[in-house]
Image (cartoon, rainbow, N blue to C red; front, side, top):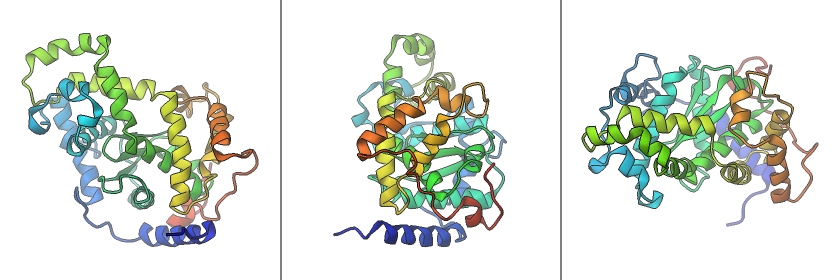
Length: 315
């Protein structure tokens, strides 16, 4: 089937997102989005999966403990187990940063992200997009379809195309199983083995033991993914955003902004520490897209604030 022109796809995406932004959230495979967010412990109460992780009582499928699960080939981790790992990581992440209280914004980002994820290689995952109440500039994901974006990053998006590019980048990390590969590599390392050996010996199989899981998760998000994974998600994220009908230069504009950031600015410290230099990412995209990128990041006419019916959110 021939794809419609970009302009037509952009108009379709805009119309769809406008309708979705204010539509009621229906239940999906894992339940309603708000119920799922609450189950992850986002209320700050320590309940849901967050409490299970801290208590070390969450069960995996078929009696596998965390170490044996993540030490095997990633290809042998089936989708239900991948989703379970992602839910546990999401709970840990929500334990350090709360949900942003603006439910209209949560709904909008969820629907925008889910629209983009439908164009991905794995549309059937229980995709969940979470806005964190954090002024920092960052976005990250967890296996199984969990994507986090900070309010500080959203505030600095000039338009919807930029936010779409960021979400598409994170979606691509999930579809390519980058986090699972990174976790497997760490789980097989001697350092990790020494760190959790006593826990593995003294806890029954079937438990995601809190200490070992937290160590693995913190290591992953503190050091970030490999550069090759980031470059891969940039290239494929641009293509995914375009398939969803958005300006493919949205992510380019984000990277051009990030290029001017310095590590001494606390807003950007974590993003810069866990990603390749923005200029290197732009250079890789330039090669992949076959043209110079400077000055070509055309802004989409719709801003996040306009979707939500408010004033400018750019700061």
